[in-house]
Length: 511
Ligand SMILES: Cc1ncc(COP(=O)(O)O)c(C=O)c1O
Image (cartoon, rainbow, N blue to C red; front, side, top):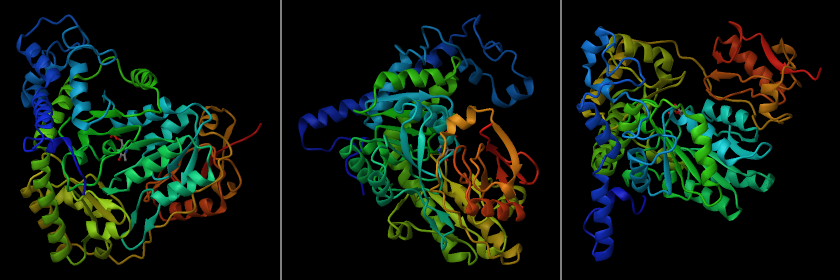
């Protein structure tokens, strides 16, 4: 359980000064300065001689406009004084960002219009110099690999922990971080993903305290955690620790539209102006004001009603979890208790449904759900389905899902397979910086069979496990080569392969 949070900063505390402070904070959180500005502008039907070319929606294709109505396109404006600039905010964008920072209890919040993907890259470029080393779990999102390549850091990989009972990959533990810091005292800091796609959260507070005691920075990919701060039943959020930078996809669980994310700055170790510059360098000069407005609205919604809304969402998710566990013999959803026993915490709003006993893969069931039952999941792999709930979820959605799964378990049967979730050792030797290899033209494709001992010049990610098994700059071991050949023989999709079947791999050549 967590302690004080802004959404509980509501009247009721006996300390009078604190009460007044909290009341002021709550009152300001009712405001949506950016949305209000854009709405007022849209209502005035201003004659547009600015980009974009559709001119308040006038030339948007009729079929689309008949469906959506035309109001929404009046929010699609460009930078001018009234609506402020994302790159140098002094008006409503600045005020909206300040309210965001206040709601999350951080020093500064940057609005992002290219999702957490751009936030991850920004964290590396803002916090690291070329040649620095950073401790990072191998099961990171692909944008983390991009950040490593673009910033020119040396990654120190942490092997992800696998639980073969749950067919699940966990994230980094405190003990793993401590071991890595002891072994590599030169590391500038750590990069952590928490919670994972499956909602598994690591003990961030302890990790942050350890790192700061050693003067190391902590960067957190909290793409799936923008809601955590607002409900005490959920795992702790990075913003409740002293993590230096943390990025959240406000669009994933809260009600911002796609691409709306936020980078929170809360550091004594990282230079603020550098973060500001990097964020500006990476973002478009034509941001979607509609996306920005929904960030403003999503913040107000979660601050004022997040506790109540997520109490309901937790209830319906738990209903779905128990229904599956009690009524569908061939499917199972792990529980918070099971995850806590393994030393992690769980965001219970996410349902990870293990389907191995059906004899069908997660992919197959995902397809059946979409085609026959009109239900679309966020993700599936060989073993699991992942159902993500958000601000807009309701009980009837969950009822439809569990009834569909129950029906599938009765109607569809596959042959039992002995798939095992495993990965090779990925604590590999980094011979060259990923950036150096990426920018080099001294590369060639060789037969995968002959790849052992060579330095990789590409990223290869089989699904599952969805973890990059080969990264530019690392020496390819026999174990990795054998693993890839095995995956390829089993017809597993390998992202990054340049031919239909994985027969070759790109490596660095010294000539
Ligand atoms: C852990 C994690 N980090 C980062 C991202 C990228 O986030 P976005 O889609 O907001 O760019 C994702 C996307 O799924 C993710 O799962």
